[in-house]
Image (cartoon, rainbow, N blue to C red):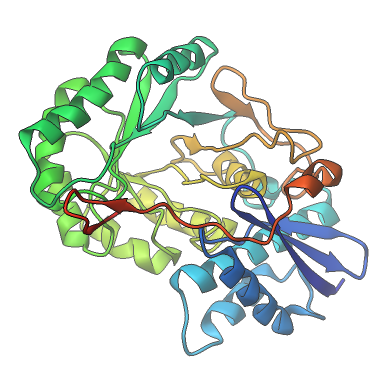
Length: 371
């Protein structure tokens, strides 16, 4: 079996899908994307395609090594995301060829169902609190919300009260049985992260995500040592090498590699195995489309230290058979490969040119804030 063509197409709201074609008629799906830079990643996919055409798609590890290590410049969000989507597609082809879900090729399932968490709006209250209550009544056991607005390097007591009050509204409405994470989104300085963590501790957040930007692991470790709230991070880290220092300095209790960015299914499985040595959990980041979610679920199924899966869509309007959420969990996928099939007719109206701009925040003085 040989790879014959790589086909990419942009899908609203901000996704890039990949179809990898073979001479045996098996087509593999992948999601190689960087939010706001999908056109750039598409170009990288087709550059890498010059190597892949004519190759056996089942030699996944070999091709991963050749693509990642075969060039002088390696890694980074664009190249590793392109590689990630390509890797998804090779696993999808291999699983379909063998008639097995990917997780069965990685050691088999270690759980019967996969816990997921929903998003809560981070800019408004009112109806969004009620929406969370409805979600909890429907069976969701975990949610995540964000920090509202920009945060100064050293901010006011009023800002601390706003953030804590924002979280408290949901905690009061949902009660102690529901897990609620809070995403600082890298908007917060180490000093403010420590202050906010101390103020939030009585409300028992599930985790604090990206309390500071990930470039400075020592700063992350400082925040982790200052609080009893588990620290989660990793969506902007790529490959096992980037996660090594995070684990060695015990800067996070929950790793959040994104399977569309960090290197793909097997690379994240290796990251999860590293995390086991430090008794850390893995909660894959996935604010993307149904192919990225499908890849994540394959990893979740076979990973002992998996915690919970972020999801943006169950695939309604994109998949012929969308994922079902039952009591806050998705049942183990059973189909071969990634276990999904795109609904081409439903996707057709959602195709676009790939233009999507990352939102930007400003401080009150007009200066750029981290989003």
